[in-house]
Each structure stands twice: as structure tokens, then as C-alpha cells.
Image (cartoon, rainbow, N blue to C red):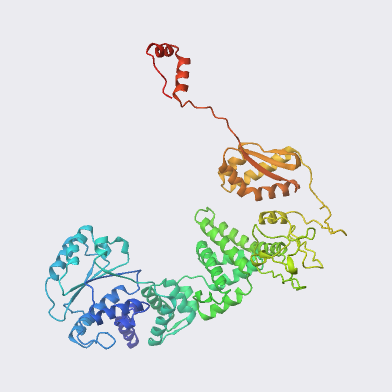
Length: 619
């Protein structure tokens, strides 16, 4: 056998997985559980040790490791100043070699019967030969049977002074409450990505492995807070690449979709390039990736872009430095409104994916909708800019205060200014305007400002307040020209409304009802179709309904319904009202006199009986 083969076989025989080779042996080397390790060290230092501990949390976060370190440190007679085991005394040496007689480990997953617990209870009675305590570590304790829990309960409640029980579990909810109440409970949290990356970097340095930061971040994200899982993937990548861990090698070996695909797809969406986005998705499918994973990853990509929009939230982006710079660059090209709309679209299609029979088409529809989001957002921004016009501050004159347009939102109590009516200023030439402290003075008519500054700032005109729903309804109408005469009054607006007959109206009404049915609004569909609507003079639509609940439904749908009817019928004078039908109910007989009268009509002998027995009616 060649000598180089012998060396390789020897190295294979000596290989130890990183999860065992670099398993923490002291409290200070435990990763990501500083609060718990500090508490345990203080308990040992102050001699406030409980007789039963429960370590619970997800897999691979250090529960069993901390249990072993605690057991080892408790019996060490020569603890360091930092409350760590010395690793030199007989107790520490026997523990490290696995021959300690004071520490017992039981795997409850395979030893979950009553007999196993009874054997454990029998051993508890004997005092330790070396050291001060006997420690019993029961892993996966939730796997014990109900009978085993009951057999263990009494011993756990009143154990000998030298016995300490450390229970570990990943499913705390499966442990009976009587056990939980007798333990000090420590909840282990998932390990942060940065902590996992630092730990992997230290191992890579010890093993002389060149590891890219982005590659380690991918491993840490894939591990989902479990350090043991990250170490297993680390070993897997090292086996695949040798002495170098690259970003490309990690995504190929762990079957992770490259970030570059998400950046390219987002560029196509921003450019409204539907063909490019579909071609990229086809390439992703050809590489063996699932459409559901892609849509989930795209949602996460939009979320990462959103957190990059603000320096306060950028710390929530847990990726490598190179990829973080790419996110910052692309986030600068995206508006916040677009990202919010894109997240909603991606989330909607994510929920529909499993219910769809043609899942590829579902993702493609999502991409096509995302490509149209930017257009919708820009139109919404334009309407918003046309809707809200803030008056420039008035210059102070004769002691008048400057009117500041501060707030940014409208409500139903907004004050609207007009040049037709005047409000006299108060005494001493000063105007007090309380609304200026709460809302800006704005003029809104069909989405455009209609304010004409007066030469005298003391003359401020006030019209009847307009609700925000009326403003939204007005922006859907065609733009109308406003003419101001010499007397300052507005000329009548030009109208483009077209007449229609009842049959045309009823067809459009039924079309809208069909749309409502497709949206699975069955109750509203029934309300719209149970009775035919009427058209009164001045284009007033009236509909009779059965109850107030249907009235509330129609109120919520009124804006969309009217917009649809106006656009289809080309008539912008339409209004809508609904009322509940008043039903006359038959009067019920409740009094004794009413009952007697009714019974007498049915059987006249009742009258004779009344007189014969000299009976009186009970009122």
C-alpha cells in the first residue's frame, strides 16, 4: 500500500466532527447563552444551587453542553477565580475521560419506561464517593411515559441533599406541570447569526481554512439558530471544497438560491420588464429550485430592501458585508411605497401557491403583477400630490400671525378655504385660528388647489368641510375646468355625463355583482341581486334591503360600486342610497282578555261557562 494512502487512512481514522471536537468545556466558551451561563456561575459561587434544573430550547443551542459543564464544575474542588473547572483535579480528569462515578447521563428517548426511572431512583440514595454531589442528567426528558413521570415525581420533590437533577428537553410543553413546578427553568434562545459566524471564523483559523465572510453568513442563516447544525454544514463544505470555503461553493452544496437572482429579478421588476423576469424564473426552475422557495426568498429580499431604507433598521439586515452593500445600492432605487406593495403581492401569492393546481403559473402571475406595481405606485403618488395642496405661509401684516401649514394628513374635519365668504377678524387686528395647531389649511376641489390669496390676510374664507371620501371620489371624475370671473365666483363646471336607459344600467349592475361573486363576497352578491335597483330623478340609485347589516355592507362597498357604474355608463351624476324594507308584523295576543276573546270566537261555549261559574278575567 502506498505511503500517501496510509497517511490518508490515518487522517480519516483520527477525524472528529467539529461539533464534538470544538464542544465547549467551560462556561466562557459557550456561544450565545451569556445570561444563562452567568446565572449558573453565580449559583455555584454563592452556593445557591437548586436540586432540579430544566434546560429547554431548540436543538443545537447548548442545553446538554451546559448541563455537563455545570455537573463538572459543581464537583471541582479547585475552581478558578472565574468559577470554572480546573481540568486538573481527579474529579475533572475522571469526568473528561468519561469514568466519573458522580455524573450519570440518561437518554430518556430510549430509556423511558418505569423500570429505568426506578433504577435511577435506587442509585440516588447512595452518597458520592468523590466530590460533594451526584448529578443526574436526563436528556430528552419529555419522552418519558406518564407512569415514568409519576415514579420520578416523589424523588424530584424531596431528593437527598447530595443529588442534583438536570433535565433537558426541546419540547417543554410536553412535560407535566407537577415536574415543571419543581425545577428551575432556563430557556435557551436561538443563537444569533453574528455569534455563529464568529464561532465558525475561529474554527476556520484553527483548522487553517480560508473562509469567505459571505459564505459563513449563508451557513449561519441556514442553521436557523442551531450551532450544531452550522458546524455540521461547515464540515460538509470543507469536505466538498478542501481548505477553502467560498460563497459559490456554499450555495451549490447546500442548494441555496443565489442572492444575485433576487437582485436581477428586482431590477427587471423596477424596469417593468416582464419577459426578463419570466426568463430568470425559468432559469431558476431549470437549476432545480422550487417555485415556493423562490417566492418566499423574493419576499425576504423585499423585506431586506425595506430595512435598508433607514439607518435605524439597517442593523436588522443579517448578511455579509459584500451583499449588504448590494442591498444598500438597490434600496436606493426603490421607493418605500413600491416595496410595501411588492411585499403584499408576494405574500398574497405565497398563500395561494399550495392551493394552486398550476403552481408555475401562480409564480409567473406574481412576477407580472410585481412588474406593474411600480406603475400603480407612481400614479398613486401623483394623485396624492394633486389631492393635497398646502397653502404657502402668509406674511405677517398689522400684527397678524403667520399661518403655518404643518400637518401632513387630512381628516373629516379639515377646514377648506374659499375666496367667496369672509370671516371678520377679531379685535386689535389679530386673527386666532385654532385649526392651524391641529391641521393645515388646504383647498381641495377635484384634486386641485382652488385658493386665491386675498390682498388682506385678515380676510379668511371658510366653506363647509369636505370629507376625505368625497375627495377620493372626486379624483376619479374627469378633470374639469374652473373659471373665475371678475366677481370671484366660480363658473359652472362642464359635465360630460351621458344619458342611459334602465336596461343598460341593469346590465352594468349585474356585471359588478359578478365581479363581487368572483371575489367570494357571497353575502354582498346576494344583497346586490336579491332585488332590482331603481333609478330615480337626478340619477339617484335606490336599493331596498332586508336589514341593517346589508346597509353596512353597501356603505363599505359604495365607493367602488359608484366608481364602476360611473366609468361604465359615462355618467358622473350618479348617487346611491339604500334603505331597509319596513315589514308590518301581525300583532301577537299576550293579554288574558285577548286570549279570552280569541277563544270565544272559536268556541262560544266558553262564554256560557264564564257566566255559569261567575268567572272573572285576570288582567
